[in-house]
Length: 331
Image (tube, rainbow, N blue to C red; front, side, top):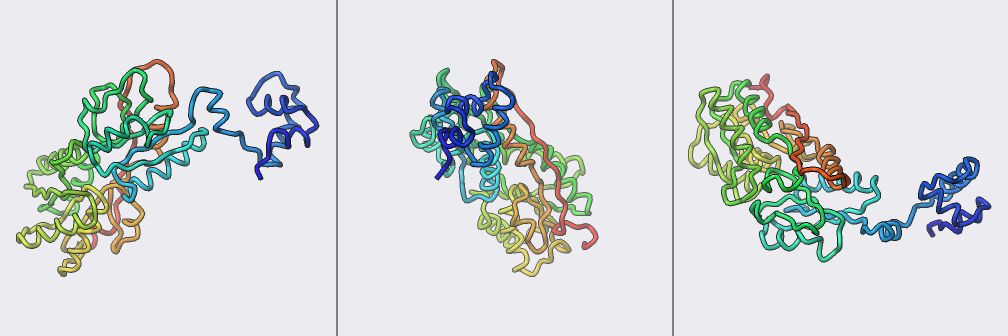
């Protein structure tokens, strides 16, 4: 059973009020008494009652994360980092998924399943910027990804244009001249795929190379596999594919190998997100690695900052993780 304030007070030989003052950081406690009480708090592993603390402060202590897919490796890893960082701040993270459905996204903008929350972190796929605008009494909301809200909301993202340009340039520098992009999603309001397509096109234009673009419904392995089959069936003479997610890349690489293509000797494959599966693929997958911990911290910093200020766009770092799926020395 968890230790209580009364348990700590009894062992330390002080009043419950004194223990409460030490826990809450009240300054007018004698240093020797504070030290003795803190030692007992540590020995008993006392943890404050978060619910009661937040109730007294007029806050729930709950933060909602609204994402398209919990099963997505990228969103799963990001949710883990957000949960860890939220716990450090005394918050509890609630996770809800939308499946990219506009009605579900709109419903959850008001909270997580009817829960009163102190703030929301949302990665929308379907809603337009106008749909994302908040009333003055609504809980603070932070956007993840490339959806925009006209400067009315805090927005955390990496530079997707630069990242896509970097990975495409890397493929060009390894000698690839027929590079296909797998991942445009023209049916979604989410602009992340548009930004990655923009960076891909910029790199090809700078090198004077043609491109080939294969749209997908989702960013799953099956969609990447289907796109690779489409390229092979069409007789497309591609020597590299840049996939807009690691899941797409893993599916594409699987089909390429099934059809007798050697990766990377015949076909270089690059992805995006740096999920764990890609690190253990055969061969390991070259990918854009967003700073997921940085994304989590930036989003929570936005919710934690209650000072009057204008909403801002926060760009988090990324880097290109070059692995064997594009290695130049095996071409």
